[in-house]
Image 1 (cartoon, rainbow, N blue to C red):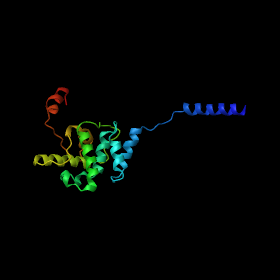
Image 2 (image 1 turned 120 degrees about the horizontal axis):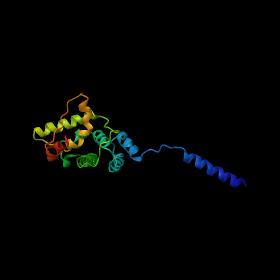
Image 3 (image 1 turned 180 degrees about the horizontal axis):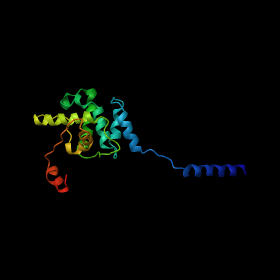
Image 4 (image 1 turned 30 degrees about the vertical axis):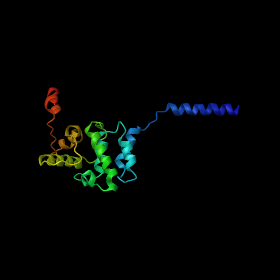
Length: 178
């Protein structure tokens, strides 16, 4: 009888626990938070690569992680000129840039970039390079990254112009008042 009472008591406790609303952390949010905090070391690169390959990782996280990787260091260096010890980091930067440019990462208003100013400078430098006939290793489509710098531009802290002469921007956006 004691065993039966104990079982009923255990079942009641489980029901009570199950009836209480429990906050379950979203695993994608946790991965994004972790990716933003991980330092770019050789040991952390596989974990960063795995996190950034997940569907649901947002554009702000991807660009924050990209800027954490110090891309300026090898932006003007050819692939063959990168030292062997830094090739894995450059490969991850390549993958992030390719995924951003193909629209894999979507903007999420709840997860903005950590340092928008640094990325705005990156886009401005990319535009200056294009005007001078140069191209860095990692160039972002300005239309796709515009949501990440729009708030920064609107705040008036610094003027960052994003222009694209693509067909979509010229012909489709005017149809929708954009």
